[in-house]
Length: 399
Image 1 (cartoon, rainbow, N blue to C red):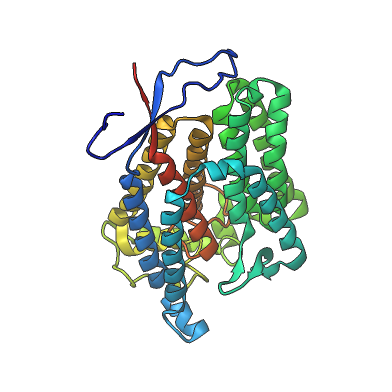
Image 2 (tube, rainbow, N blue to C red):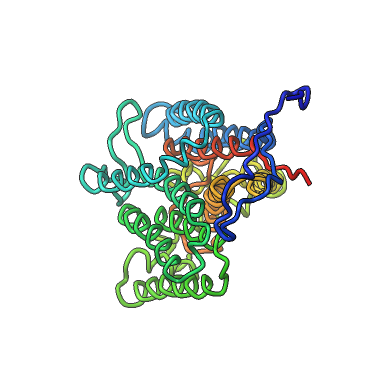
């Protein structure tokens, strides 16, 4: 075979596969180019993680000094997890993604097993049992693994049965898989369950050829959630219901459930165009653990509108390039996996920013790559590694 280019790219035909719709052999009209990964995605993630390391320190050094006796406590832990995340991301980017497709059901079962382990040996913190003990790092959050598991499982199902969503039965089966793991995650945390469910059902929506059918099911699901929150707020006075009420008027709950949202809005409002500067946040000292869910508001306060716009731009570029990878993917599994990773990062970023701006009711969701959280950071970067891996394998039409 003649040399194809100076970069020695490998061209692999896959056109002899059987088309499940026509039951006839497809002509070999496509090839798969194995080239360089998408370095735009790589650079964007590097910048976001570096911003996160700086912002975690800026938002936490006062609390770390007071509570831990070490101003660099959270910076050191976050930096270690960031380095581990870079290693994992680069390793996963080189591993044959066929292993992920082959073991997707096993990964899904492992995630379910970990969620069961949370129920048995979980560690309670901040009113929820979300962590299990883990050597060296101390604790581990299985709901983060559930995000990856639901992505791989739905992609696996779409790849194995491309026509599976043609019928109501298929839709119920797909929905049952997502619903099963979502219910397990919901037991450990409402916000984590919300994210896992949104990723899974978002992938089903994209894969489904019957948009109206899915919209009907989606409307029913959203209505059920809103109805539950309304009932919880008006008749049960539950925690989630009060959060729903505080969304409309946080100042009515300024000494309780609305306190964090109010501090977020104060931080965002005081940032101005260029912010107060790194380490100069005033609101970070008022809000417990500002380096977690509220970190975007602290970033706006310290970096101003310009800094906020940069962060939003970086997430926008990530989503754009991720969708581009999905469109060029050469089979159903890689395309759906790429879409799942984009949904996992993009939806979580959107929800976090919407919460701190009080655009939606308050729920505890971290900002990917930026908020403090070891498991979240490493799993997110591992998923980026999968996306980078897929970006190296693109389809090219011969005619």
